[in-house]
Length: 181
Image 1 (cartoon, one colour):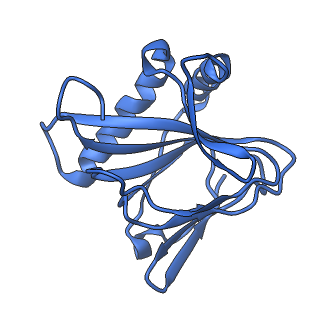
Image 2 (image 1 turned 180 degrees about the vertical axis):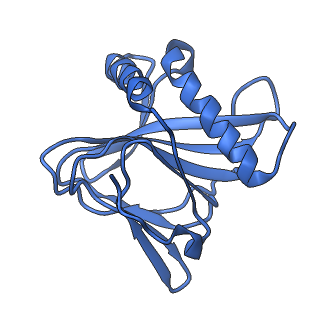
């Protein structure tokens, strides 16, 4: 289980998906099958790895229940009842020794950003949120969801475990067409 952290100090909302294990297992299996699919896009080559891996949503029905749950949490945070939201998601696969450098997600017109954790080995790196002089480090657990402003700088410390850590990151915005995000 992840350690408690004071996310409210930096404006981060934390949620936990109950009974996530079976859903996570289906998502992981589908992701592994799609990881090297020719339609899967990869970007942000830093430190010898692609930080963002984008499996094609149309070939990934296993992700839909998770995205629906995330959308519900986003509606709670944003206080939006009816506006059509779109989610752009990608996977972040951190091998032992990997880090994710300090960055933000405010590239376009996102309303919220977030990350959901599928596989979190012990000592696989804390996520650190920075706001002004405040920095809050959180050791997530499988089934944890963090929602935050796209402009909030964050990073992930070194994966000191001997295993891969896997998460789904995303941006949420108002859907402007029939396409998602």
